[in-house]
Length: 333
Image 1 (cartoon, one colour):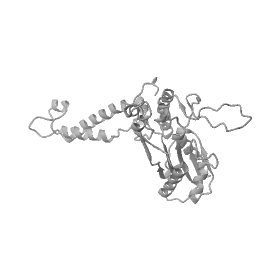
Image 2 (cartoon, rainbow, N blue to C red):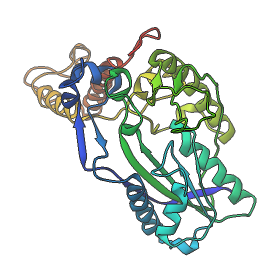
Image 3 (cartoon, rainbow, N blue to C red):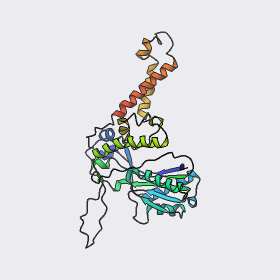
Image 4 (cartoon, rainbow, N blue to C red):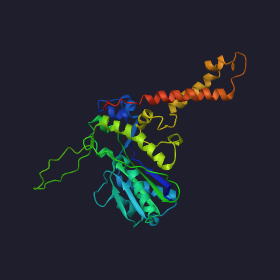
C-alpha cells in the first residue's frame, strides 16, 4: 500500500508577463515564442517572497485535505533555491503551518516533485510516516538571464503543494538520470571576499542547450511512461491524462503510439468546432452523401453519423494545431 493525494493547493505572483511584454526588450515575438513553446504568459515575482507563496499553497493543501500541521509526519520541499540557504524552505513552511515534523529541501529541478513523491512513498511504505506534505516552489525569474531569449521565455514563478496520505492510490513511479553538466547549468555563488578561493565566479544565470534538452525529453518521456505503465500493469492506451509542461505536446506527438495525448480543446478550437457544427446543418460530409444518408429535402443524417463526422474533424483540427508545436530535433531555440 502506498499513498493517495488527499489535498492540493497553489499560489502565484500577481505580476503577469505576456509574450508581447517580452518582445519590448527582446528580439522575439508572441508568435515566435508560442509556436515553439506553447507559452502565452508567465507569472513573475515582484514584491512577493517565495516562502510566502509556498506557505500559502501549503495551507491550502492542508485545508483541502482536512489535516492540521500537527498531523503531518514529514515535509518535503522541491526547489532549486529558497529565499535562504538556511533555514530550508521546508523548515520555513513547517514553522508557518505549526508542524514539528522532519523537514528538508531537495533539488532535482524540473522533476523535483517526482523525487519528492518517491521519498514520500518510501517513508509511508516503511511505516515511518502516514501523512506527508509536499511543496514545490520555484523563482526562476531570479535565475535566468533576461537578455537571453532562449531561456527567459520558458520560465515563470509559482508554488504548489499536496498532502499525501497512506492508502490505495499511487500505482507506480520511475526515476532515472542522464547526467550532462554541459547541456543545462546553473552556477552557484562562489563567495564574496575569501582570500583563499581560486575558483573564478561563473555568470550567475541559467544556461541551457534547448536542442539537446528537447532531444532528451522526446526520447526519455515515452520510454519512462511505458515503463511506469508496465510496472502499474497498464497499457499506454489506458492513459487518459498526461499532465506536463507547456511544450510537452510536441514530445507526445513524436510518439503518439506510446503516449496517447488527450485531445483537449482550447477556446479558439472550441469556437471553430462549434462553427463547424452550425455549418453541418446546411450540408454533410461527402462520405455521408455518397452513402445515401443525406439528400436534399430529407432530414439530417442520423445522429450517430453526425457525431462520428464531428469527432473526425475535431481530431484533425487539434492534430494540425499540435503539429505546429513540433520542433525538429536539430532546432535550437
